[in-house]
Length: 70
Image 1 (cartoon, rainbow, N blue to C red):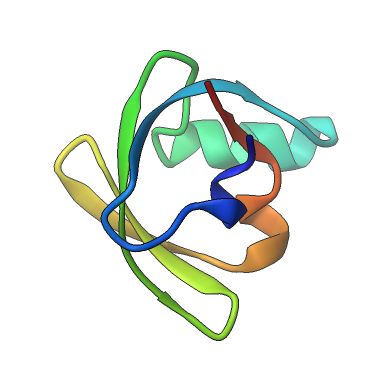
Image 2: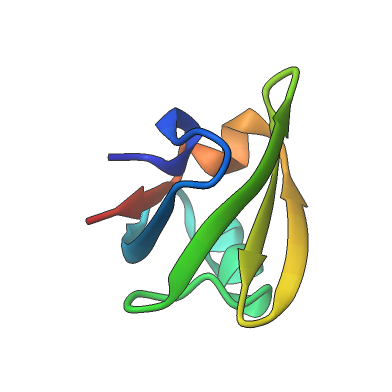
């Protein structure tokens, strides 16, 4: 399930990253790699703030749809 479907407070583990090489590389450089736990901190108008590895990262809905959580 993509994290774009998660609600505030939901937690999961990243299963895989979808998209073209540039998008996957960008997300991986932010710490979004398979096996990493994430938590949705907030949602607002399609954008999300995600906590990953002790940091908070803002993502738009397009990028959030590429992160699949198992």
